[in-house]
Length: 395
Image 1: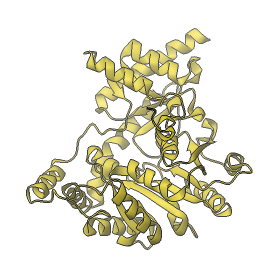
Image 2: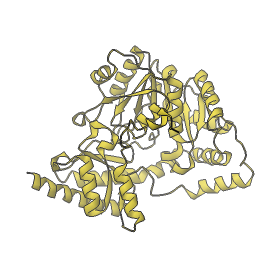
Image 3: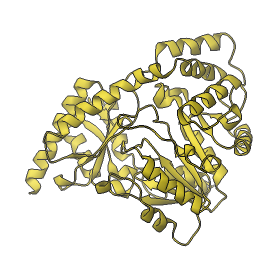
Image 4: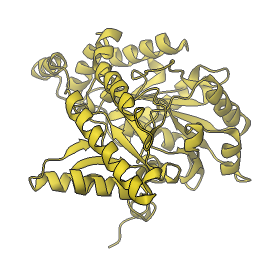
């Protein structure tokens, strides 16, 4: 028996882009010490107070079926948070709670797409984006951006990707994974004009909205005429270091959310109640609580940029937010994949090749700032010396 084309085609028939990561994990399993700068996994785990609330809720009996759309208080808390941060009127009826941000991404595309319809996404991209679109039955179409333009999308590139065939949605991510780039008002204005002109849904992944180091986060849902065509993905994973708890949400027009609740009934059947109770408690701790969780990544970004700016072989892309730095290693003469593989072999430092995130990031690597400050400083020092040695050989 054969598996469905929907599943066999998730990765587009090629690698899923995680080969170096899998190699690093295999090395660790075999007993080799590896410094992992690969995935966006907090090295400081979920605050024990959140775990205490999770335990309390479970022991109190909230272990049965929970309300499929999300418990009312959590939906209300998410709505209040979104409204306070964006200024867009938002109520519980605009929110559905999902098993993490990835589930919200899938639900958003299920809402936006009929089978065979085209869906655009910006390149570089988080590795699951094209597979999520394909899993929802869509045709994934990348929109290239340029390293030399700090990976900001342009109207020219958007129009070229659209061509003469219609598309139903555009997926963006700001602050951005993998680049750390933030889309400001000018870029978001271009995106808004494009989606309005072509009657498209905008799916906005904003899971890093608490990790903003330069400037401010602007949700495109707050732009004129965009609330009715924007679906916003959010999550407790990055803001509260609750990656394994799988609590996320989707915010959008009330009528669309009603359909997405129906989808949840037929797929996930909701999120465990004790996890939702813990998420509600965490949200109620306010902005200062979230800022404490984000603080190490701001500090590490500044530390790492200072190291990189002291040399001229490796170039760092401007990182206005998120827990990553995208580094241009083309001066070494290697691709991002070859550089990452060689660095892992030579020094047991694992990074993600830019090619894992699309053709636009070829010749780059992504650093996740997810080890302690001293280990990160040492790894970056080794990485930069390794790059300098390669560049001298290539000259």
